[in-house]
Length: 405
Ligand SMILES: *Cc1c(COP(=O)(O)O)cnc(C)c1O
Image 1 (cartoon, protein in one colour):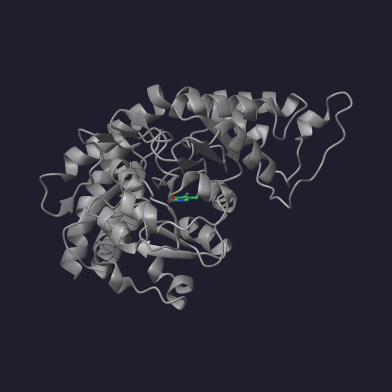
Image 2 (spheres, helix red, strand yellow):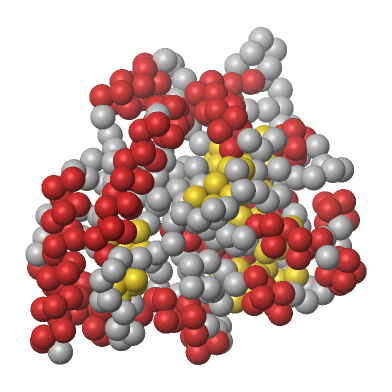
C-alpha cells in the first residue's frame, strides 16, 4: 500500500529528540525558544509563539482579541473543522462563506458577510496556496468597513478594525508577492500536526505581525502567559535562583509546546526549503504534467506569478461532477493499494453544523469542488516509481469506475 502522508522520521530527527530527552529538560525550554526564533526568521514576521496545536493557537488568539458571544467570525465553509470549532468554543458565531475555483475563500463573499458584529476574518490557505491577502487586507482597511466596526475591548479599540487571522495550517513556506506566509496578515497560525508539511508530531505556532500601535513582543508575552495557566513565569524561569515565586494573572489555558516537539521542528525547519519543499514540488510538477491535457481531470493551481504554494495537498478534481462517481473512483484506487483522501468535506455537511442550521446549498462552489475532489499522496519519502504508480492507478480507476457506472 502507498500511504497518504507518513511523516519523515530519519536518524537526524531521532538523534535530536534523543539529545532533548537526555538533556534534563523535556517541557518548554531552550529548544522551543530556539525553534520560535528560527520560525520568526523564516516567516519574516515580528514574533512567534509555539503552542501545542494550530487549533489551540487559533483559539488563544480569538480569546486574546476578546471574541465572545454575540460576535461573528467569517471563515470558509470549505475547511477542516478546527477553523470553525474554535469560534464555537469562544461562544461566537462562525459565519461561513463560499470559495473560489482555487479552493480558497471568496473575497466577494467575505465582503457580503461583514456586519457590525464581525470581529475577525479567518481565511484558510487550502492545500498550501496563500489566499489573496492584498485584497483581504485592503478590504478590512476600507473606511466604510472600518466605520462599521464596533470595538468591544482594548485590543479591538487599538486595531480599530476587523482582525485578519489566517489559518496557515497548510501553508508554511507559501509565498505571496515575494513575502512568506506568516508575514501576510495580522496573525497567522501554522500547524505541525503529523500529516502537515513540517511536523513536530503535534504542534502549532502563532506568527505575530500586528501593526502599530501593537508591540508584538508584548503580545507574545501575553499569549505565552495565556498558554500556561496565566502563570507569569514558566517552568524554566522558576528554576533560576530565588525564582520559585510566581503569580497567576488570569485563568489561562494549557497549550505550550514541549522541547521534545521542538527538537523535531528544529531539524525539519533547518532543511525545509532546500529539501522538503524541493521534493514536494517535484511530486506536484509530475502530477500536474500527468493530469493536465487529460480531459478527465482538473489540475489544481499551485504556482502563479504572484503566489507559490507550500505544495501541501495535491487537490485533483474529476471533470465529472458526481459525488458517487468520485467515491467509486476512490474505492477503485484503494483496491489498487494507493491511499488517497478528500480535502475537505465542507462543514455545512457535518451533522453538528447542519444541526445549527448551516445549509450546503448556500455554498455552491465549495460543493462543486468537494464532490469531485481527490487528494493524492505527497510526502518526502514518496519515490518516483510510486508517483508513477499513483498516476497509473488513478487513471485506471477512473476508467473502471466509469465502465461500472
Ligand atoms: C490540520 C488543520 C488544522 C488544525 O491543526 P492542529 O495543529 O491539528 O490543531 C486547522 N486548520 C486546517 C485547515 C487544518 O488542515
